[in-house]
Image 1: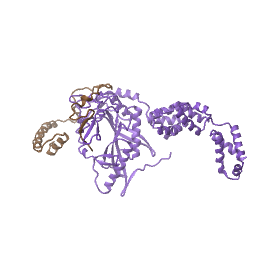
Image 2: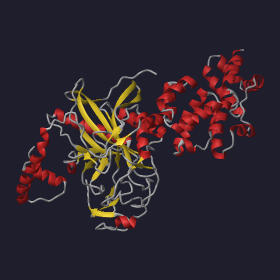
Image 3: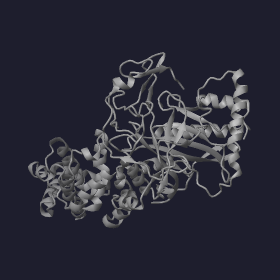
Image 4: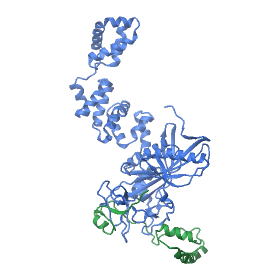
Length: 95
Length: 489
């Protein structure tokens, strides 16, 4: 797999990271060399191997259905750049 | 019932087009607390008051799954006759939006908790099976409010993190009517199970609607468009009609349909492209590293299966067999669990068939009129059964029964008491009736002569006179019989 400049720009946009054109060049080079390194893994046959998503051979821990949190509006809104006591306030998002 | 033929096609100039619809229904799970946090799920709280540091995505917070939400998903899966997967995985679905503080939604992608199932619909042209592709658990997002400030959007995260079941159908639906029946059936099943309250006004049930069209008889699907987040059955139907017509027009004009996400504008009654969702399908799913795979013991699934209530399809069969109802009656009476419970209570104490008729007639009309659910009916099942029995035994006529019905509504008295205290009992003594009718005939001798000389329309006049002088209490059948007998002589 190789990355071209368009792909880099697309991924940056999806991640909401601003990347100027000058940087795209070097990023493409860097990321391509990283991918090349990772691609060595393709030398192994993994046809019958399930993807490993966790090294812990356990199931998910669960909790009871009880109300044990909330009612901390002040705390929740505290770090919001703009707020009005009740809501988070963000620049207008309209469809 | 005579079977109609399926006939929903869009007529273009170059032929008939079939509409192919698939639904992704988002059903809010009934639980006290959220999917991965302990905040309350109660509807209508003050803004941002049911938000924990997990729901607002503070750094370092770890999600812990609510076991009840998992059970609710399994129950729903069982109710949809679906395969329950013993192994499922939570993934991150990445996108940016103001009401999604994590920057990703925890969902299930490759390994959902529930696999293929099916739902049966009763259509006028027969029974139709709709395939279920999958059901998975995911988090709801917060709510954006656009109309409180001209230059800002306000965000309320109370809904953020509440558990949703996304139920994905196969593209088996073919008309707005089938969509209506499908949503109602899903809703009914989930309400029986107690896994979702199905309240569409509060947004507990909403759907993304996938629509495509193809020439009648074509085997291949057309390009589909997805209409996002439609929150009423009526709007779904309107959106489908608009969208199908739009696609047919494009095809007939030799244009290409873009596969895209659209929204339904309820004010203009049209769908339009959502430019902001251009990259929407680039979600970069990957397994959530904060959550281990969900492994379900077969015993848990089997135990849940044993505790499931009787579901609408089974109950309908039983109502037909046990109470002698026809398919239509049974269908209506099992549509809501509360209705079926009420009916069974009434049917135990009175005539089963007559009870169904009166429930679906006068009782439903009254409830509808007052905007009440049957659980809030001002007439108890016991009183309703007494009323039905009074009609069945001939004690009162159907017409008087309507009167008694009104009085119960006003006073809450029991029907027996009302019938006695108001002297509403039907006059069914043949001797007394005959005496009264004879008096009437004597008083209207001229009309009797006219009748006998061929003016048979006057029969109605005599019946009217009998009803008038009996205060509407004369047994109608008996009145007819006696009148015919006496007028012949």
